[in-house]
Image 1 (tube, rainbow, N blue to C red):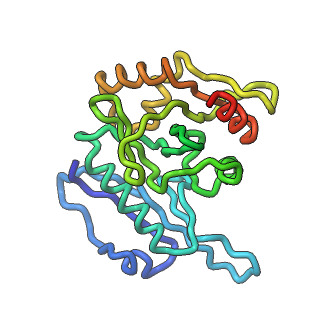
Image 2: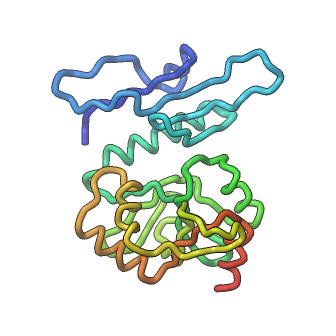
Length: 218
C-alpha cells in the first residue's frame, strides 16, 4: 500500500519508547491521520486504567505492558500494508474443544462478553486478524490454517436474553465488508457465501448459551 499513518499518544516519549520516529508525510503520499491513539491514564486516583490503544475512536486493546500495545500496532500496520494482496478481516480466530470459529462480536480484548467466553473454555488466538485464502481456508498467525465451523457475531439479538439465533441472511456481505481491512473483492464474496451457507452465525446476549449451543452441536 505504501503511504503514511499517524500514531498519537497522550503521554510524551511513548512513541519513542516503542521505536517510532516523529516525522511528517512526504508530498503525494497516501495519508491516514489519527489512525492509532495510545491513551495513558495519568490520574492520581487509587484506580488507574490500563494503557489503551484506540483505532480511530474505537477502543481495541488494553494491557499493562506498553510494549504489548506496540506489538498490536505493528501487526495492524503489517495488515494494512498488505491489504491489496491478502484478504485480512478483523475476525478473531477462536476454538472450543476441537472446533474452530471466528469471533466478530467486538474487537476489544477485555470486553466482558469475551472474558466470560474464556472462563467457559473458549480459547482466543492472540492474532486479532484472520486471513481468507484463495482456496477458501482461513489462517491466523497463532494456529496457521484452520477451518471455522461457526461464527459468533453481534446484533441484532433475540428478544429472549438466553436464546441463540443464527443470523445468516442478507446482512452477511455487508458485515464482512465492514470487517475487511481494505476493499472486499468479488472472489472473496463467493468464498464468504460458501462459508456462511455451512457455518452458523450465532448471536446471543448470553455467553453461556453460546457455549452450550456449540457443545451440544459437537
